[in-house]
Image (cartoon, rainbow, N blue to C red; front, side, top):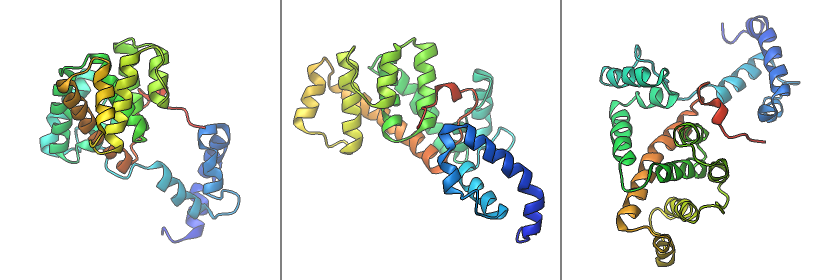
Length: 239
């Protein structure tokens, strides 16, 4: 049936016209019009193009569909947040990955950095790794829970200088250097980080934060995880 052009033309024509109109109205997705050749392709080709672009590539589990070892953790997230971030649904494919995220996340939140500095590392890593989902999630934390200044959050999201806070600037810079150089930062880069007041314990706690971010950022990038409506207001605006 899926090979029958008439079937696709009948079932998806109106839907695709509607999506086409939405793409025109939404600047973020205008580039997809050219990508999917909406004016020239068959409905079937347009359909598969949209599915490739918009559907998550890894299963996003619910507590009902998750592996048994992940169910309790997912239910706890639902109870605590009122919704389940799609990252959790993706990580639930591997109960150990979900456990790593949650348990290391607890340790990361109680390390030698302040709560604001923890978010500096997480937002910086997410932006540097191209993970819009994590940028949105941690921007929400920084905005609502920690009341971080908007200029700081915007600088972190855009990876620009934080002129109002020398320590945050050094921390963000060091985080990106760790990622780019896989930990092999130069003597000068390490010295610059310590010069603003950070110590050896802080260095390793930044490394831990980068390790945690790597799991989340890479999982979302591999899965093309959709951003939940609850986080959408904090997502990066592209284009």
